[in-house]
Length: 126
Length: 126
DNA sequence: ACTTACCTTTACGTTAACGTAAACTACATA
DNA sequence: TATGTAGTTTACGTTAACGTAAAGGTAAGT
Image (spheres, rainbow over the protein chains, first blue to last red):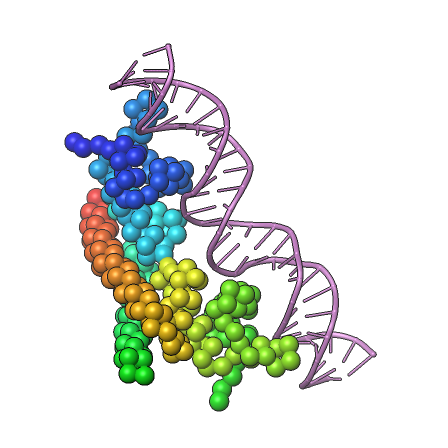
């Protein structure tokens, strides 16, 4: 039954402790306490991982919280569940848009690289 | 030889004119002028499209400017070209990381959806 | 001539996501 | 006992990416 200190998590994910506390202020994390000191469970660690993944994808912290809350099984209400499914669909749409953007950007990068190499060769001959 | 007004572009890309002017302030766009008025070429329009694509991918405007400048062929210097190739590679790395993130998130979303549907069914029977 | 619909610049305001500093506590170790 | 190391709260500061007036210019239509 592993647990983690705030600085351990900070080191592992290459963020500052301030950042982790900030996520807690926003209600994205709520670690246990031993006295005053925060004690993080593996579940907390997973939440942090999800938050940072969301960040890399350009999600706001609020968006991330929405998504993360989806994983919690405590949603009994039917309307809640339907809302969640909608949210999931909407996120999927956004992600697919991102996939499209990325593939286009990668294509552009390839072309840019080709242009660079071509330019380099011609430079070599001048 | 098409051209566009600022509000035309704003409408097309669903941003405000303030946003477009802001990009110009940061040196990401430099449209021609007819008197005081900005006149955008198809090339300007493409640049705007690239900027917004970058935004969707979570790039900063500075990052976007770097990438966009890669497409300009006016880079004669060899060192410049090598730097560009490095930048391209680094962007590619970042994008591949994003692809990985997205595939993982999509997987998570699928699981969350399954959980939702399961929960819904059990609710129906209670 | 007057309104409407654009365009312009200048400049202060706002939000998100932290950074940074101050001031304090608790535990371990030289 | 002092020095360090890691934790805490509180609170003001900062940066990016615009928002939001304010104040004005210009050309088209009525």
